[in-house]
Structure formats: C-alpha cells, structure tokens
Length: 195
Image 1 (cartoon, helix red, strand yellow):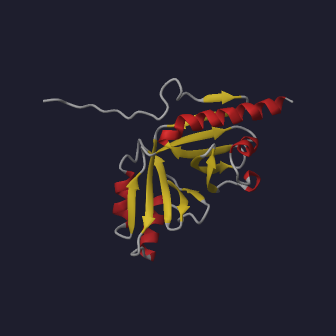
Image 2 (spheres, rainbow, N blue to C red; image 1 turned 90 degrees about the vertical axis):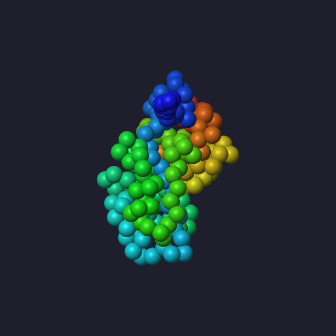
C-alpha cells in the first residue's frame, strides 16, 4: 500500500524565499503562520465574544485594530469578521480549536494556504509605504491594521511597531508580484536615504 508523505510548500520557492535586505530594509516571507478567519453569525452572543477574547488572550480587536496575546494575535477584517494568526508549529489545528472554543455563534475557516504573510523590517518604513499604498502611513501606529491595495493587489497591512515593523498579508497567488513591488519600493527609499 502506498504511503503518502506531503510537505507544505511556501508561496515563494527557494532562493526567492530567503530574506531580502535592501539598504536598511528587509523583506521576509513568514512560512510558519497559521491563519483562520472568524465571522460572527446571527447567533453570536456576548458569551461567544467572551470565549473568543479568552481564546486569543486579549480583547477582540476593534475596527482597524490588531491585538497580540501570548500565543495568538488577531485583527479586525470587516464588520463582525476577524483574522486570527498563530504559529503553525504549535497551532496546526487553529481553525478547529477556534470553532471548538467559540461555538456555534461563528463560522470559522482555515486560511493557511489562501494568504502569504510577509514581514517588513527597517528604520523608517513610512517612506516605503508612501510609495506602495494609498493610506495615511504617518498616522499609522502600533496596533493599527488597514485593508488596502498595493499595485492593484488587495492586502492587509499590520503595524507591529510604528514605522519600523509591519506584516503584510496578501493572497498567495500574488506573493511573487507583491515581493517584487515591495523590493522596488525598498530600492527607491534606500536610494533617497543616500541623497
């Protein structure tokens, strides 16, 4: 009898997956992220909300907000909808665990292979986002999230540290194009730093 051994494949194949430093900036594909979406139903109660908050370890994020608990983080994605992120190494069954914890007041779906998560690091990333997206990056601070477009690709931008550390979630099929767009913006911003 055949024995199948499957292994996960990242959106960017090696060597494209390696961290890309440009000047003081760096782009890294985060491959060990579990992602689940949570959508409230008509039966969503205060008790469901409390169970959700208890699961993520912090209050449910408000509109345009990103929160981090000890194990899980979450962000608001639409009215009555959130994304929950965690380490895939320790939370491989994130969607199922969420559904079990919150109950029938929500619909939960696994999003692991639907999205690619990039981490952008560097001093003064605001200049990079000025070139990439149409939101006010200067009013963007730690804990903020926005759904926007970059080069006509829909994505979420999460601010982990004002101006210095961001995560970007984009549809997996756009991973290569998004990587290219971000690296181009890095190059433009790094060139201006030298002037």
